[in-house]
Image (cartoon, rainbow, N blue to C red; front, side, top):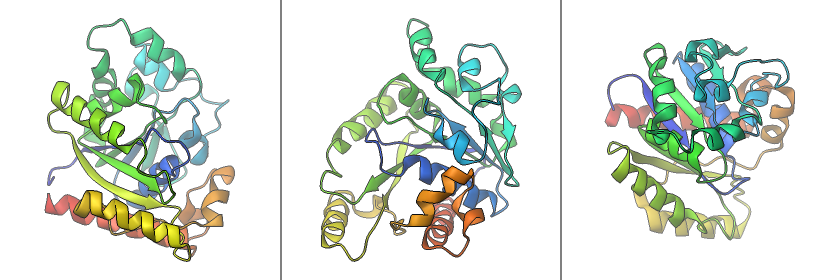
Length: 259
């Protein structure tokens, strides 16, 4: 996709696969490449918000208020400490938005309409989806050009993936005919573990070139940095996690030029 303003959903209904970690650190790595990036926290747990240093008790306006129409989108965008990286934060109130919009017309297009107001301001908008296939995730997929799927290298990695792919196909058919899978990224990769390589091989067999070349290693520093409200590059730029996310950003940007 050669034009600007790309919207990417980071989605997997399985929890604990590195989805939020990938959303935060890919966003930060792109911002450090001088790309204008908006991170959208679409998970009521609000981990992407706290992971970039936004105190969940301090912001009065967040994604829930955009869903309900209480505020315009530009009124809920917050600058982070990372140059070129902004965020639309979220907290537990976002759960209520799913209930409140369920009876509305065009309920699947709410987030698309929310983001349309600010899309020209950014090169990339990255949406951190909740670990479910509910209305918040459907909205994210409807608003996005493509989907990045983080996958942990574990025994049950492929379990539930068919359901996610079917959901993506359903959204493509019903709401967003431009939607495609950007790629799958392996997370918590332990090259010393035999099972890791077996799972990676199995995923490669199923998805071929859709599996990105960059794998994210299991890394203690990656686990630590969210509690400090920092991305991995600012927290420890020489860690294997930081090196991997910089590499992922480069691979992602290279793929954009090819599309």
